[in-house]
Length: 169
Image (cartoon, rainbow, N blue to C red; front, side, top):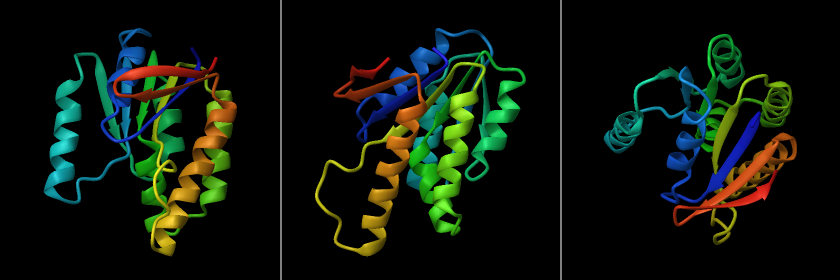
C-alpha cells in the first residue's frame, strides 16, 4: 500500500478501518488531524479519536496546510493517516482558499508519496440536494475532491456499517 483513500458516511467505521490499515504498516505512525475544536461537541470527538489510538502515533494538527504536514511526516513516519479531507475542505472554504488549486496540489502529493498514506473522506453526495448555495457548493467540492484523490490513490475503499468494500486496487 502506498496510498489509500477511505470513504464513508458519518459513523460508518472508516476511521477505525483506516487506523487498522496504518497500524499494519509499521511502528512510527503519524496522524494528521484537520479538525478544529471550535465547540464542545467537536472537542469531544477529537478526544475520542485520540483515545482510540494505541501507542506509536504522533499527532500533527494542521487544519489548512495539509501538504506541509504530509511532507513533514514523510521524513520519519512508517505510515501517515490524514483524518479527514472533508474537514480540510471545509477549513479551506471558510478561509476562501482556491479549492481547485489545493485539490490538484494534494493529488500530486498523493501521486508522489513514498510512505504509506491513508486519507479519510466523507461521502456526502448520496443524500438530498442541500437547500442553500453554500451547502450545495460544499457537496460539489467534496465530490470533486473525492473523485480526484480516488483517481490517483492506488487503493480506494468504501466503508459502510463497519464493512469495507474495495472499489480500487
